[in-house]
Image (cartoon, rainbow, N blue to C red; front, side, top):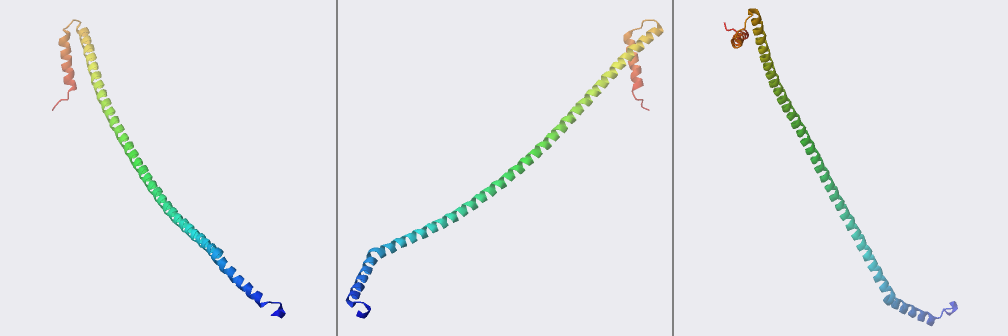
Length: 166
């Protein structure tokens, strides 16, 4: 080995120094570095697991929100349908009330028209009686008892107006 420029004693000392340095580094530096790396790996795994849990929780929350939104939409549709139904019922009731009021107004108008017709006929009858009395007085040219003439004319008119039973 001498020819190669190697000294066995130095080589052995270097070997022992190298092994001693390797043992010291393993105890002092390598083991703590590996422990730190293991801690970091564990922390990274824990962070990934927490992120996965948060993602799953977020997905569950999103599903719950979607379910609440769907329930709210259905409830809103039900409320709108109910409001439409109530509105239609109120319109129908209003129409029916308007028909009843119109019927009452028509009935009242008919009663009023009949009353006015009867009053008109009575007024016409009185006028006719007075005209007949006046005509009879002029024909006879003497003054007769007005009350007797009115009674006579009313009786004649009633006999002429009333239907005759055969």
